[in-house]
Every structure is written in structure tokens, then in C-alpha cells.
Length: 219
Ligand code: NI
Ligand code: MN
Image 1 (cartoon, helix red, strand yellow):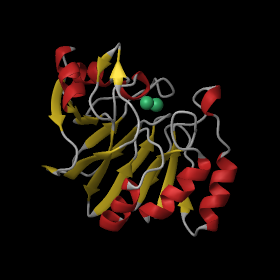
Image 2: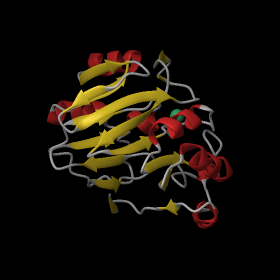
Image 3: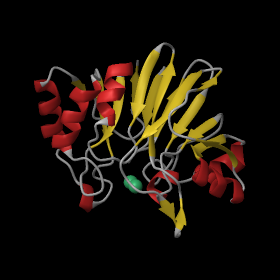
């Protein structure tokens, strides 16, 4: 499987059989070609995560998976939407996924977006965790205990989410092997020191994968 970084908290995961997008806010990857995307996962309703989800769904027919209230909003806007709740696995031809709690908020244009979430995917026998926007949370210990993700995408920019220090603690709690930082340096308020992040992750014996836009990471 291949994980491609599309800036901010946006990623493409491609497997042998499918191409999925997470939080497709593509201002930093405007030349990204959405052709062939079959599913989109949105962690919460804030515009820097919902991004182009509705537009891409209309263009490609891709299903937008989101928490019930946000999926209803996307459906009203013309997307092919699938409403989900926290905490139960849904199976697909490419693997399965579960929405897990995130400590944050979720609304768009004053419309309540339901609970914010993160996602755990099981693809090709490996667990991948995308935290969405969240603070450090005890939930991460549970994810670590149950899944020990091969890869965890964690916010490090602070202000609205975890910062570098808390994301390093989260990496330990998650028992993750590789940590890809996200949600930093998109705008000045969330600037983060990626060198410090890499150093601290190395100190706890894990692999930090700081990715450039469009960069691929094979697992
Ligand atoms: Ni947010
Ligand atoms: Mn955000």
C-alpha cells in the first residue's frame, strides 16, 4: 500500500484495489488528480478537513464517509454520502475501517457536524490511524492496546490540536511504529519544529516520517 501526503491533514491511501482520500483539503496539492478515488473519509466538518470532499464526490461518485450529521450535510450538498457512528467496523473490498473519538469540535457555517472523529483502517493486514484534529487523549491508549498501528498520522501544530510534545506522548500510547506529522505549517498559527519532532520520536525508538507534498510512503 502507498500513502501520499497532500498537505495539512490530507492523505491518499492506495491499495492494489482502491484509492481513498482522507480530509481532502487540497490547497497545497491543487494539481492532485482525483480520478479513480472511490471513497473519502472526513474527520470533522471544519473547512480545512471537509475541503473538496463534496466536489470530488460529485465529480467521481466517490462515497463520502463521515459522522451522521456531517454526512447528512454532505448529502444535502449533492455528495454521495455514508453516515457512520463512532465505534463499529465497516467492511470494504479493500479492508475495513472504524471511526474513533477525537477531542475537538465540528461545525460548518453554523451547522452542527456531529462528533469529530479519527479513523483506524485495516488494510492488507496493517493498521493505519489518522487522528483528525484532537488533543492528547486517553482514547489513544485504547487504540494502542487494540491495534498498535503500523502508521499513525498525528497533528503537531498546536493551538487547535496536539503540539509536538503531546504528539510524542501520543505516539508512545498508540504503540505506533511510524508517525507522520500533519496539521502544521499550513498557516503561521500552527507552525511546528519538524526537526524537534523527528529528534523526539527517534529518542523513543520510533520512526518519524516528515513528508513533502505529493511524497509517497510505502508500507
Ligand atoms: Ni478542526
Ligand atoms: Mn483543522
